[in-house]
Length: 218
Image 1 (cartoon, rainbow, N blue to C red):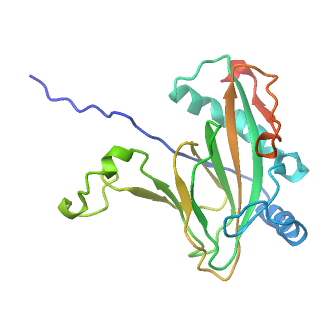
Image 2 (spheres, helix red, strand yellow):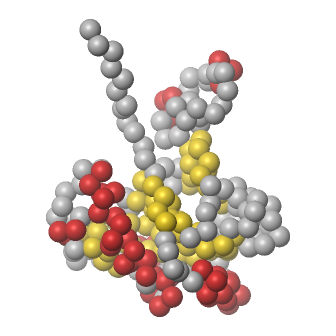
């Protein structure tokens, strides 16, 4: 009789590298927005308009995901005839001691972060274990250490300038406080999958939709 291990309910996050982008210029644009726009968020730190995708300096995100997202969707066994779009995107500036509270992005399928400027000790992304029932075991005192991903209650993901992180939107996550004197600058957004190409969103949270890829690329 053979012994088998079944990896059930896996949760994957992805990091995607970029090349040749002018992060300095993007940082300048976002810092100017910070000076002239009020934050749309009640969280700590500054959060700009959800319609960042309409800004000419950030339209490259559509082409980037059009080239990269197909392989991720195939891993999740999504149908090939779906309409895939970025439904919103916004800039973030976290200054000294700014952080982002634990939250999810409801009503969408995938969320992403792109890191433009990441000073040392400016706060990591923390993703919380979605298996609520496992958290009820209270087994911390029984473990040899807290380093094994199978038993950790949260995973920290390093922020790397010029890199995307994409993850299922149901994952609770937060950002640690920025303990640097320099601003931590990023953009965030959401991706939604639909059976129809004419879906309209009435609220600002889902109002800046942009098609990512044709259905036969999914």
